[in-house]
Length: 152
Image (tube, rainbow, N blue to C red; front, side, top):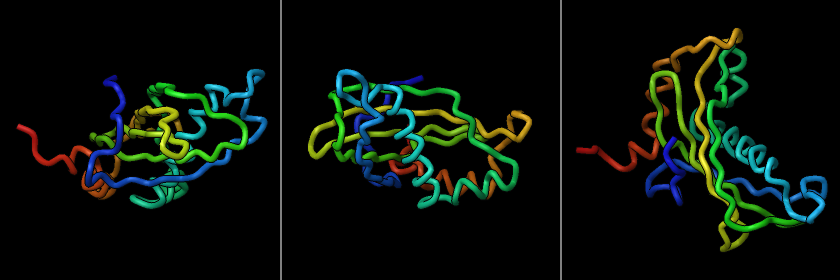
């Protein structure tokens, strides 16, 4: 898996959510436990789908899910209780049955974390399925790779 993009490429469809860190999300050192960042990425990814494709619940109603196949996170600074984090996500690429999302988590001007997740479309039995063609076509237009233009 390639390293995560540092920021969303210009022109890529992106969404940003804000999350106020709850006390239960911190550890004995008073910082956000590293495992919680994966949850933050999921919250942002679902909002991105709502805003730029279709609500995830509509995929689920059709018996389709995007199973997480890879997670990459880089921690740049610590977040603590009551911090308000801005989690920005974008679609890096989409293939026939998979996609990759990029993320950046900030507290004000400070970058807290960056990362990426990869997902494969599966049915309820966990078997790989192609992303429906009309959905895939829509996603392709929103991917960072499309925003970057043709590559030689």
